[in-house]
Length: 175
Image 1 (cartoon, one colour):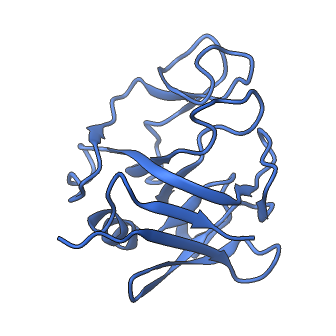
Image 2: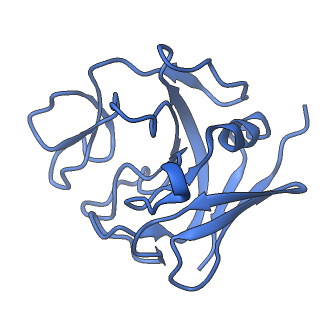
């Protein structure tokens, strides 16, 4: 299998929450953060972080969808899967067991957004308190409504991206 080296994400305009993911010859519609894209991402600002990131790992809901074909590490979500979003907590921007003592996002959702979710390297090493957490690539809402800072694609398109992604791929989010 031939892996892409760079996956590009561009907004349709400077402050648009609608964008395009480009890899190889594919151009795929995506949703971006409700506040557009920013270089200085902050917790809760609703912006998608500008920069170059790596794909870290993939999670999926085995009770709802099949395991994706990808060269990335893949894990099944569990009903107690969560992601800490409390900047002062020692597990900030890390997977935790839900419910969690500090604030955490539940990854086992009632809607399909996290049926397939990719963790990217934004604010991972080093983690900076307040610089943003839970920035993922996940399934888009109907109509590609804005995200809270993530990149969202249709499940079909996300599977195409994952089939071409490796741990060495660069995800480049442009201004």
